[in-house]
Structure formats: C-alpha cells, structure tokens
Image 1 (cartoon, one colour):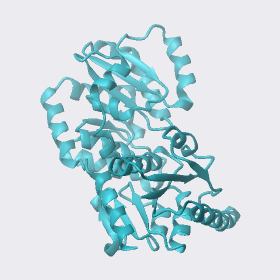
Image 2 (tube, rainbow, N blue to C red; image 1 turned 120 degrees about the vertical axis):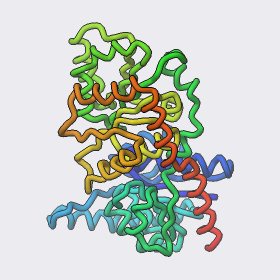
Image 3 (cartoon, rainbow, N blue to C red; image 1 turned 90 degrees about the horizontal axis):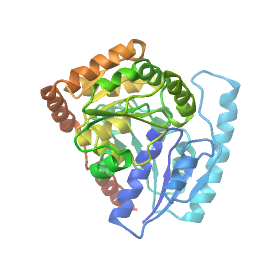
Image 4 (cartoon, one colour; image 1 turned 135 degrees about the vertical axis):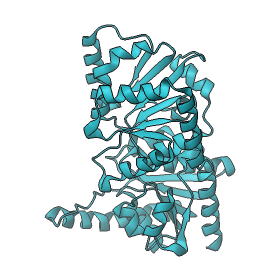
Length: 367
C-alpha cells in the first residue's frame, strides 16, 4: 500500500497521522509513505524523526472575517492544489489521509480531483473548518467522538476513535520509568501542556513547585514545552534547590512509554491526549485551552468529567492552589483514583488505528 499523509500545525493533527502510518506498517511492512505538510508547521520537524519522506506546500488558514488576507489565502490554496497534484502524480498513492489543519485542505482536495481514495479524520467533538469543507469530496470520514457524527454525511462517516489510542497501547511502562529514572515504588504525575507547552499551566506549577516535595511517594514529571523551557529553567533556578521528586523536561518524544507509567495526568484537553489517557485508563486533571476554535477542548474535557474520569479546571480559575487541591483529591484517595481509572477505561477506544486501517483497505478495494 502506498499512502500519503497530510495534516499539521499542531501535534494534535500530526501525531494521529503518524499513528496511522505505524499501524499500516505493522500490518503491511512493505507500505510506502509520503507526508505532505507545511514548512512552517511542527510537522516539518516531527515527521522526519519518524523516517517518513516529507514534502511541503505553501498555504495559510482562512480568517473568520472578510479580509484581503482571505483573497491571498484563496490564491495560495489554488497554487497549493496544483503543487499537491504534482506530488501525488509522482508518488502514485493508493490512498490519501488527512488529519486536520489547513495544510491538508489542498492535498486531500487535489487527491479527490485525481480520483484517489481519501479519508479524513476529525479528532474533536466540533469539527474544524477544513474537515467540514473536505467532507463533501472525501471518500470516508472518520471521527473520534460519537457527538461528531451529526456534523458529517451519514453515508460516509464512521466512528473509529483517535489512532493515538492504539499507539499508546504499545507503550512500555518499564521503559518509561527507565527513561525518567523513577523507581517502581513511586507514582508518576505527568504535567504536560501540549506540544507547544502552556503558559498558564507553567505559571500555576511554578507558584507551588516547592510544595510538591511533600508527596514523598510521587514523582512529578514537568514538561514545559520547548519554547518555554529556557525561561522556566531560569525561574526555577531563582527558587533555589528543587525537591528531588521533580524532573523538568522541554519535551517528551517517547510519550507512549511515559504515559504507560503515569498515575495521573495534568494537562490540556486536546483530542489526542484524551484518546491516549482513556485507552490506558489514566485519571486526569484537565485545563482546556481557551484559545482554540469553538472552545473544542472544554467540550472534549467535559465528556470525561461527566463520566467521572477527569477533574476539569478552566484556565480562568487555574491557580497553583486549585491545582494542588485537585491533585490532593486524587493522590490521597486510592478509591477515587481507581474509580477514575475505570471510568477512563470505559471511554477508551484502543483499536482506533486498527479500525482506520480497515477503512483504508475498504476504500482502496472499492477503487
């Protein structure tokens, strides 16, 4: 099978695409891949790490208000469609997969115009503009939440879950602990603000970081995000010696291993993160980003909260004290932790990537 992957801008679009690629490779070791993204997106750095050939088109997102910039964007779209057609003709894929972000718009559209089967994947409860546009021409639409089914044509839409759920099932807790240097007798709390980090979470953690030492049976893994790491490190040095049960990292590339060892997650409510923690049954404290379209992270998070799998703290109410209170409620109450774990597992869809590959095979057979 020859597969073109596209999607970008944030890790929430890129990691699901890479998870599908790995599942395709597990089932078909001879598969060939090409990733088409943007030079300005995270995909330009992340995709080559996965040893997948990368090419780029130039494109930008539409503004939600009428503006001259939108005319420029439309011109870029037309040009990017032409560039994508050239790449597709040269690579000759059996199928094209789009996982969201404006870069996948011209690529999936170009594939549909060339008669190549296409599948788009929507990670969030509320679909993005690109996927809503592409759903008209895509061969198949895969969604992560049942609430999303109503937003797409019923005849071509299937509930698969998020492929990152399958990816983390291959994580190795022992390898995660070895990477972190944490003994088996300690719980791990992972504090992770997403692929770019989160200023509000960083500020809340900084305000109480010295108090985390009182949890002697817990190790805190504090992932700042690459762009915040130097600033946070300097601020931590000003505080003096940190408690020995805290590790501070800019980013974690072996997230499946680390999550497999995690007792509680503190972080944003991106769709990939929620897919991962529900597949593994990790209780969580979720701080949804208020800076995303349609406030989709809070809508994602509230579903876990209603099921009893997570505590939700909206960013405007996030303080070091409110974070510590939520942590205390989970860490000091094993029965509560077990209840949250089971609730998370009840929401998990660990076979998501396998189901997406099955859908890919179905639409390529039809061709």
